[in-house]
Length: 102
Image (cartoon, rainbow, N blue to C red; front, side, top):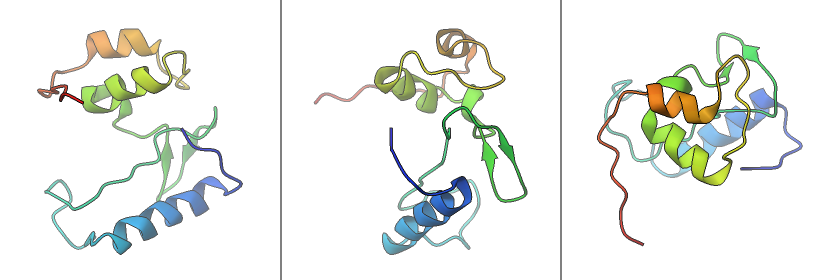
């Protein structure tokens, strides 16, 4: 969770700048391994659909590796246009998410 005064598009640019500072090469394969991947999943209760930015994130509802950690930090979050978070997790494909000790 993050509080910001940045508009959604400016926040996206800031996240991409952090990725670049950490060695992320955006010319790499789209779905390949990367040094760092920061996604803007939600922005309050806004729905944004532009060429550069989709909020809620377009893959949010299908990814257990996003939904399960989201439920841990914000169990009551409402995702615009989606069923309850618990229901999304139950319906989600298992990508082999594994909890690490610590």
